[in-house]
Amino acid sequence: MSSANQNLSSYDETTIPSLEDFKFGIVVADWNEKITHALYEGCYDTFIKHGAKAENIDTVQVPGTFELPTAARMLSQSKKLDAIVCIGCVIKGGTSHNEYINQSVAMGLQQLGIATGKPFIFGVLTPNDMQQALDRAGGKYGNKGVEAAVTAIRMAELKKDLDEPAHTIGFGKV
Image (cartoon, rainbow, N blue to C red):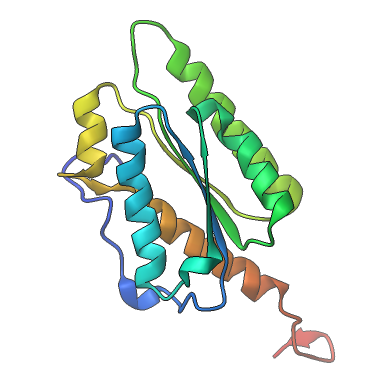
């Protein structure tokens, strides 16, 4: 589904668990900082809104979007986190650099998630121009940072649920 005429920040708040016992990481690219820092605020504020403690949210900054997977891996290895959100913005330009960066970052985060079993969330905007980025960083389409936080919460909750030992009687789950 495209984001045309859709607020990306809309979600059912009643489905979000309390985050009191969860720990999150946020990795933010400084390139296009007007956009990425607005996305960060949306992400961080969403965690806090749902009960995450400020001391349970670790944030690191990197120069650009390309560095997100490496920093996410380093953060994951240095802290016990339930999910890590990676925030960046690569605006299409006169060359195809955006395609290489976006694909590399997406694949890097996917590989980290598969290898570790930990959620690494792709919170990267891939707009054609600055206006599209602004529209998705607190503008008319909401804030993709909020969407990334909600995705991290849902995936962390899923991991928690699946990691809990199943109660069984005989061959079936109870």
